[in-house]
Length: 295
Image (cartoon, rainbow, N blue to C red):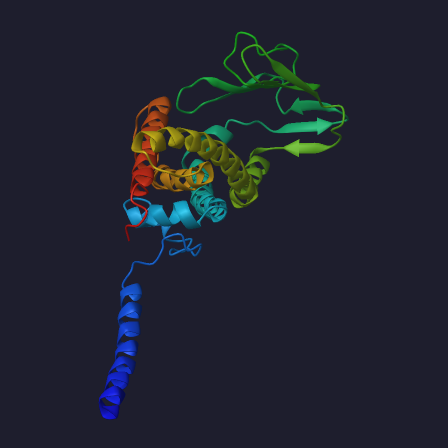
């Protein structure tokens, strides 16, 4: 009898670890909770996963929050580098193909004691090499005193520089502060070379800042639109998560606009096309969160 009791006790002890192991195995096979507060993807992944991945949009909704704003800055800085390179090559193309026909029309202008003079006592009309319209008028004789009835946007007289800001507004700059200076074609070329070399570098931080402010306002509005989509799809999410999804939804648009640009349609229609694309990805991203337990 004692042996039977001992055997029964031993059998029960052996069963306990097996039961514990079975329970542990059962828990390990359960899918991990998605709300881990740990991002599954890096700052580089949205550049391509925003185009197609449902799991990525779920991770963004749950775990990106404020990190999405840092990603937006990264995206716009990257695109601003591309746009700065485009600016550089645009200026280079102008210097090579268009500037000579424009600058070769400039006379030599001498500034002395706040007055301008040319080597010949006549009016000079600098024209657009393509359209033939007047762009700049240089007249130190006093015959032309305003930009009225001309297509020119700039007029240099003996004492003033007049610039047309719009069809109704012009701005006048006095030459009284300019003492001794000689303006010729070589000087104009040297100025353009400086612009070619440094404009893209100087313009870069303004590109980043301006585009970041614009896109921030845009995603705040898209987040509000996302609330409507979430109600339609019956997705339980908050506004901050919708903003994060909106940032990812505009990523394809920003990339397409930067690397491909307007395909030859009107600017207004291109903006509308970009809006529709962003709305499509926003809807896709919110719908991906309709099943938060999916991998």
